[in-house]
Length: 490
Image (cartoon, rainbow, N blue to C red; front, side, top):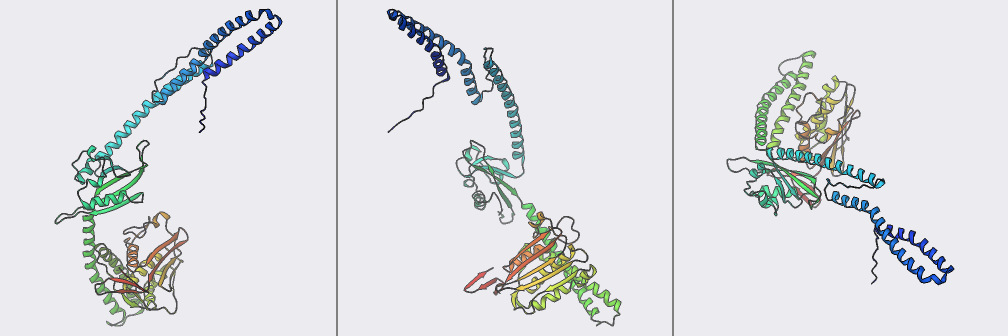
């Protein structure tokens, strides 16, 4: 084995060697020439050279020490600053560039010392603010490392989780090891151990006679240096019981109100149909036109009432499908015809594009009609006068595909991510309930289908949805999709 060690001579040794060589080489050369000319004085010359060598070396050491002492002082001061002692100053009185360097070094040290004091005060102030926000928050906040060990927990979180231990006692084990409610512990663990940087879960802890709901959200943040871990988790726990109760009250109110409105609206439409068919007596052209306008208006109003009622049923889990064999060639033309008057008023060309022949398909015809009505209504609302709205259906091998294409103003990109949520409407929208698209997505999803939107401002919007073939429904109302050699339950 060969061991090589790098020799690193100090600046003192280098300087001493340089001075020694600079002084002794001329001395030895002169002595050699002197001895060559006078050989009889050999021993006298060697003695004199030895004494002069010792004197030169002594002087070289003193000079080298004098020159390197300020450098070593600067080095020691820099080491103390590196350790955090910014009060270190260097006293160098050489009246040369080394003294200028020392003055600059001292100035830098003072500036760093002042900056550190200011920075520490700022950090303490920020720490106080953060702690004030965290500890006064009405939400429970927990800071954990990547293994779930508690780094910080506010009193609200301890109360929500019913923790009696001190913060120090919570260290060493994951937070879910201390939580008494199994559902809550499982939800926190799944959030912390999940792959997403932002996870939100709702937990129902309701017991007999007591309703209690919690929302748990977990965010991933970078851990500070020196913490021994790459990232931390911020766990936020909110009591959303009041929000859930308010949503329930709202849904109950909507369901009750819309149910009471639907019956008289159905009666109004029935009498309008009797009048329109002249069963109560003949009508002139102007009266027929007015009856037709009232029928269209009542259809829209009934559509709004139905949306509100279906939204309440969706929230309560009571909106069910009634699967039946349906002929789209019979359903769709009548559905599109409902909007003929409205499209004519705005001079919009409303077109139905579908094959002459389509195979029967199992689906809920009334809910499919609701999807098409909602999409056409939106298209007409956002399409300027003289535009085009096209309803297009095609039959594929395993599904049908429907599209509603308009030449309207399009939608802003930031709205596309939440367009299918309840009560969501683009900014500047007037009228409507914001429920139509949410109901469309619910219906399509219930049919094992998919719905999406493609829109660009100034170029129009295209809604596309698909419904697969092979849907069936059993006696319990469960919907199945039957494929070759495969059956799935909804």
